Length: 475
Ligand code: ADP
Image 1 (cartoon, helix red, strand yellow):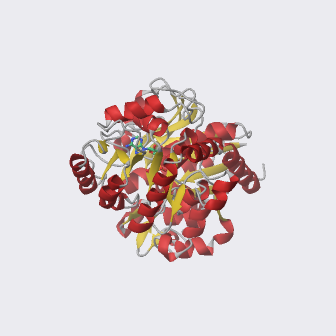
Image 2: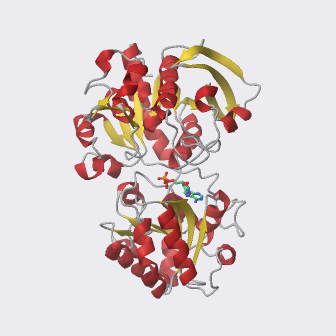
């Protein structure tokens, strides 16, 4: 079976968050299910540079106002179709922002072009290769099913929501330039509260909708988490499902991880990693529980709550190592806390993949106090590395962590600490519980063993995607 994935990022080529991890890992996992995935991706400068000699498989003289070519390339074991449209994608900065961090004013055109290209490929633009199914990821790819629908392309499609907070909503004036029939500016089409909604259009047009955990799939059907789209999600309830993400257990393998000071296959041999973290974050070397945070520093992730609670957490005797970047005010609050609590709190502002491995391999617990979390990946890495997750009971966090309540401890299945609702007192209480159990090392070790046994690979989830694809495409 042939699948065209459409996405704006893919690990290891371009990544701003968990979306890239998923689009990067899923093709190999689906390969094991007899499904060949080709991923359509913008040819950002860094990606284009790695595919210099690749050949063009299709040319558009005018793709939403820009000349474009489609380049077929195999990079890092990924089968890619790169949309080479220099006027849209050959720019400095990140995938969604210029060098100063400001969003591109023509993002609607950039990602409408990506989607239009995806729809054309689905319709047979590449000689000798047509997909049996199209899988669009997030708002940047979401117009693909919409373009397919209005072009009469009958290939089935899956729309996956990695985070409903990002919707691709643009002023209605862009509609005239999207190249869609007038009838598409309607509730059944791309119209969204008087604007144009890319994700909304994809949710409306796709054959099936998935999101990245069963709990998040249920949450987004409610006004509290639906971000304006809950009515649509409810209307399409029969076509909505949640499939939890996995992680690449080859990249995240504590027994072979090149970024660790000490590799390990059981929870007993992590001390050198903890020492390395203490050295890097200027923390005391005292055997106190070491908590880590690896995150975008934002309101969604509950980092404001963490910043408020630093003093009582330190009063419990714990140490904290934070790696992340995001809101300037939150970065400032955490840096101020580190200055206030010498040896107890360390903060590294930035994005550092190797350091994130070291933190998972050496810290005792990872804190994820998210207000909402479609799936979350850092808790999965934490489980695999015996860094016990202390997480809000929401979305994928609720689906992947087993709370250390009395029954679960007794049964030997507890893998972390859940709290509900996301807020100061419940979060602090969960940390207090964790610190108390950490003092009882045999119990802590048993939890680490249970966590490290938990299957965080893509195997089960890839089988679920494969089953969905096969149902839709009847291949
Ligand atoms: P989101 O996609 O909402 O940011 P996820 O938990 O789904 O959150 O995925 C985040 C991914 O990015 C994980 O792989 C995590 O390890 C990584 N990550 C986040 N912040 C950093 C950072 N500062 N340095 C290194 N890796 C990070």
